[in-house]
Every structure is written in C-alpha cells, then in structure tokens.
Image (cartoon, rainbow, N blue to C red; front, side, top):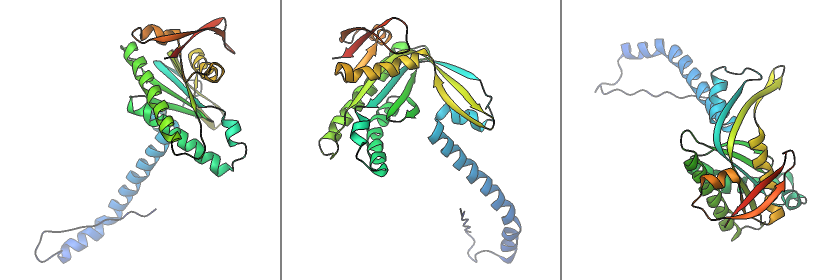
Length: 249
C-alpha cells in the first residue's frame, strides 16, 4: 500500500530552500501518522463490512469478552432464497456465488433503505433487525416495508435474469441477543435466542405454504391496520407449542 502527499504554496517564487528543508525534516513524522490513520480506516471499514455496525465498534474498542451477550428489542427479518440447493446444484462455485450476490443485491438495499441492519449472511439466508427503541410498531412497519421492497426487487430482476429465483421473507418481533462465542484465540459474534429461531422457522414455512411474506402474531398485533391472512397454527422445529402464522396479502 502506498500513500501520496502533495504540497502547494501561494508564494510567487515557489518553495524556498528553508521551506523545502522544513518539509524534508517533518515528512518522516507525517508519513508515520498517515500510515496509522490509513490502517485504522481500512480496519474500521473491513470489520464493519464483515461483522456489522455494532459488532465492529465493539471489536475496535477491544470489547471482545467471550460469553458476553447484548440484547436488543427489534423487528426481525429473515429472508432466504427458495430452492437454493436445487438452483445451484449444476453451477460452478463462481456462478453460485454470483447468483447469491444478485440475491443479496435485491434484499440488502431494501433492509438498509428502511433503517435496518443486516446481522448475518447464513448461506442463502439474510438475518436483519430493525431496532425498536420506544416505537415497536414503527420498527415493525419498517420491516414490512423492507420485505415488500425486497420482493419487488426480485420480481424486477426476474424480467431479465437467466437464472430465476424467488425469495421467502419472515417477520417477527422480539428480542435479539448478540452472543460473543468461541474458543482460544478465535471468537465470533453470533445471533442467538428464541425469537431469532422463530423468524428462521417462519422463513422455512414460506415455501411450504406457498407464501412470499409470513409474519408472526407479534407483528400482526403491532400492525393492526394491515390486512394479514390467517394461515393457521403450526408446530415449528425447536419451538414448543403451535405458532400462529399469518401472510401478507
């Protein structure tokens, strides 16, 4: 990596010998400071891209204690590509990666444009949250808007794409827990908790029920003005009892 400096002067005669001598004397110190600033900026951007906004701030602050958990009340969005395994079974690794990136380009901007944060890419799954604060209903509305926009982006892509895919989106409202896990010198931020599991299982049901967007009872209650269709109650893997499921439209 190379960094470049340029200097200019308003003096009509240009830099004097004294000016040049001063620049040469101070340049090693300036160069060292610049290297530190550039490396810090690169580290900040790379960690943000790979682990997300809040985890990257914690990592750079040295807050990397194993077992630490942070809880957030949020609207949770979980999206996955329908029949991803079948679609990519005959594709090269490069083509499968390109297809995934096209899919992410449909879903992720919709999340970010509505104030959401992508926490994890899990294969063909996208896990995102919309922080509630004191406005639970507003967070749910943002999540629903993101789900609709993501679906529209997929539909628009389908008009010209060679490989067609569809997406299922599930929405739930609850508590997301960041867990700092690992062993030895290898740690990772992951997302845990019943509510995250429920959103994931709902996304699985999109294909089973043939629905594009499924929402939980909690989302339905917060968005009472929306006309959600009751799809019945189902036993979802890893969750006790039957869970009411609703679809958008």
